[in-house]
Image (tube, rainbow, N blue to C red; front, side, top):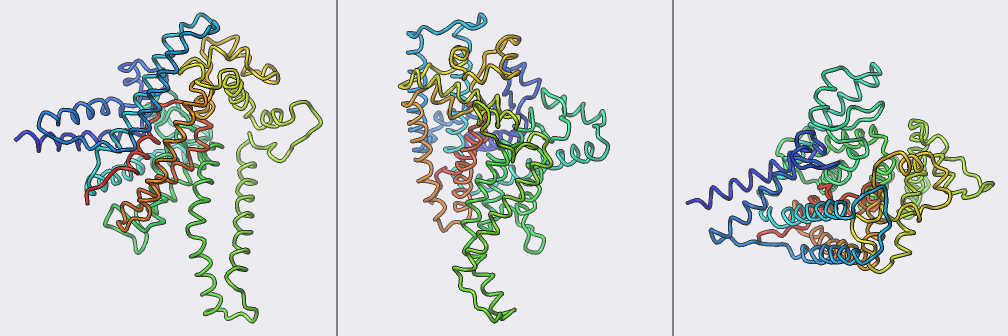
Amino acid sequence: MIQPYLHKLQKITWYILIALLPLTSMPLVKKLLGSDSVASPAIIFLVILIFLWLAGLIFNDRLLISSKVLPLALFTCVAIIATLFSFFLQTPAFKGFGELKPIISVIATLVIGFLFFLIASSFPVDDEVKNKTLKVINWTGLIILIWCAFQALAWYGTQHYPQWMFKIQGFLSERVLYRQRTTGFALEPSWLAHQLNMLYLPFWLSATLTGYSSHSFRIKRISFENILLAGGVLTLGLTLSRVGFAAFLCMSALAIVLIHRHIVSAINTWLTDKLKPRIKLNRKSISHIIIVLYILLVALLVLVYSRIDPRMASLFKFSFDQDSPLLRYFNQLKFGDRVVYWLTGWNIFNEHPIIGVGLGNAGFYFPQNIPAYGWSLLEVRRLLYRSHLLLNVKSLWFRLLAETGIVGFSLFIGWIISLLSRLVEKYKSAKPIERTLGLAGILVVLGLIFEGLSIDSFAMPYWWISLGLAVTSYKK
């Protein structure tokens, strides 16, 4: 009797969790969780769903846990073990910070990320739940796009935001609205770009490429996902996130590879049947011409971006005349401090290459591992001397190397590779929804290459959920 109601409650909780993903740092939730940054209300419903999911064992429900959870569980255990070994290291003192709090905080975020993937890869096992999940993603994505449109119209139309927008944003996010850049409901523009690249755009782009839609209505041949994709790309551009832009270009490159053959075929047919040119072009020549056009289009986009974003004004100005020319170049692009943090993480890894310094401990090793040029940067000196913050590497990849060493990094990459094999298998499926999910997962992995250079928190739920949903098993 109770079992059907429990299943229904599980599904409702899952849909609410997905619907709340746009909110990244809600002040009320931050107080409840005691979080300094990532305080998504989705985490609360994740905990509720875990308890409801486990409660099914009382009524003889089977827990269909995805096999892809095991490699991630292995990485998680090794990362925690590496952290325990860090207590045997002579960790440098840093501004009176205790070692225990950062460690507990990072382990907690890793466990949260693990649970997001566990639920997303194991819970929605039938097509109905998957389809409704994609619908929730679409409708919540539409709300994000509408709110971003209000932000863009207000700023570019009047150069300021009305008070009612500040009130709404202040209720939903820790930070207020940004000048010139859209934030959605996220903490900052780069987080909105991360949301779009790791959850919304991959599913919309995949649905567009496969022709699948989770909605029955269409405007002629245009699906809801097609419209959302166009709006999502425009919104991504309005974030002025450079890493976000690079990540989407990487995903777009795969999309172009997949449709290139069809483009060449369509142009060849059009030339042959409609124009009937005197000079015949074979498919290979047409393909080469189109590839050149791709390159020119990317170059044009980069040029336009360098004119829109003041930080990119020096994009085409590079000189070997000074010391550390590459770091100076990145500093001209207002990106130098971020690269310095990455290099610091790399230096920490070089000193502790096997299992790293333990989760949350990289900040203690910063002062002695900052590159020489880094000391000339104002932000680096300000954070070191004038702020009461434990610095971080600001990159998932360099953080993994610094804090878990080559062992943890290899296990994490191995988990990603194991996902890719499953995603390619699903992309070859005859079922449209499975092909769409498989391709979306591949796009997320490609986007994560660049997004991993911008985020370093395991608690950001978007890529965990996207990858989990993409590899989830299905009932035959």
